[in-house]
Image 1 (tube, rainbow, N blue to C red):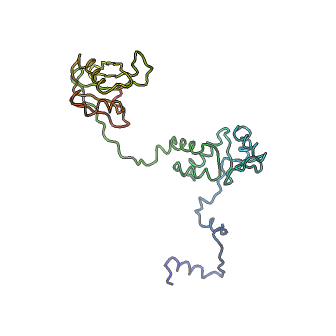
Image 2: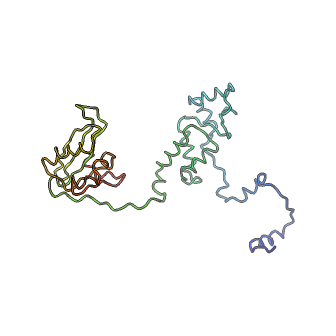
Image 3: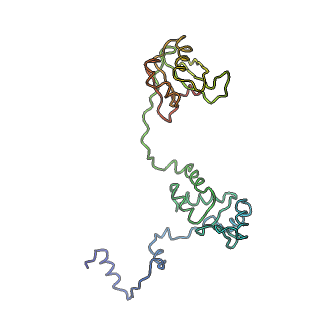
Length: 278
């Protein structure tokens, strides 16, 4: 068999030594792991000083841990057992009690350190779940990674670039353009359970119209004409948010009747409705 140039160089180098090849399974060949690793990763990293001592001390301060220790001592659980004063669970994972900042320190060790390299939620969780266990670990890791300042500043943004802001054109006359919203889930008063709010964008004058919770489209139209059109005429433009009530009652089917145009802001961008919400 023809050897590759790399293997040929190794053959020439090894020919200078007198040795005997002996097969050893990968599981038993632990020496090769140290020889094949980079030197900077072959050093021993001490995690949080005397960790077992801190965990032993913390077991007495965690109510859940104390109950598990009691069950393990009485032999009433197979999921947890005690070894040298430490509490273990399936997979020989060490139970970390809720005491001081012990859990947060472990998350920090598996996320913030140089050898960890600020990984994502899954990889950080994998590093923790292999040797340790505590309730709600997943939620705590998720919150920690989401609020990590370094990750927020340095991670590559994978979202689509944000579009250009498109402010609403300035209104030229009173009640030329209005914004509309609903205040719902209110206690009933005189048969009314919600309020229809209309704000004139030119004068910032507001009209608040009480209405039943189960108000139909026709009834809403009647209230609109009675309380707005009757005094100021039909507006040229109506703008509402993206709530189901607004979309159902003031959609394209009624824009030609109620106003010349009807629009709603882009999803998850409530700023155009700030005046109305405030």
